[in-house]
Length: 210
Image 1 (cartoon, rainbow, N blue to C red):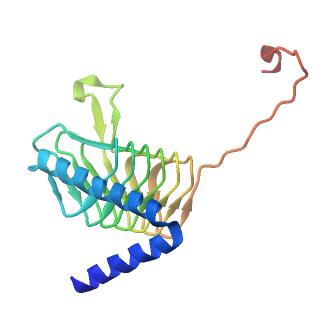
Image 2 (image 1 turned 135 degrees about the vertical axis):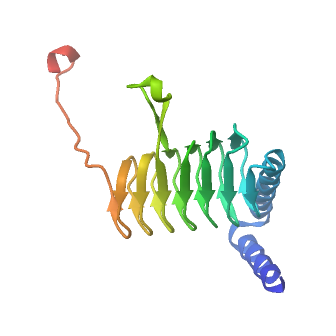
Image 3 (image 1 turned 180 degrees about the horizontal axis):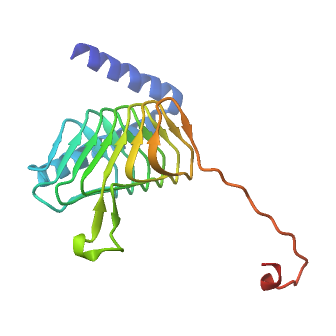
């Protein structure tokens, strides 16, 4: 306990030196409010959420729509602004220790999503363990799968991760990628994209170019 307190004091003093007093106070107040918001959602969904201390920044929300749904959040997970976490049916969502989730991310879980500790997720990332069953409504309106994201994974901005995806430890997912299937550990994953540029003269109609 003394080591944690000493480390906290040293961190605050370093921040004051590097950032200034006002910014340090504002930043730490924001963190404190985030922890309070996390605790509030834990109270609201007391039967569904198991966690220790985690931070849920402003305008981020957790919605749990079924008494069988479960959310496990590890120590010091940090969820920034405007993130949306939704769990339904028998969904199980696990977020490991010190996971960082950036602004505007969405996580939709109806079966199983696991995010390993120390993983960093960029802004505007979408993670879904299901698709809409547009081919056969008689078998239910959702096709469910699993999403496993390993430890210490880096996920760039605007990534979409769909059902039946396994991402190994220490993998890097390039910004803008759509991920499905297996991504080996210690690898870089990116979708190949080639720009197409067509010149045109001023006043030329678009339909004549295409």
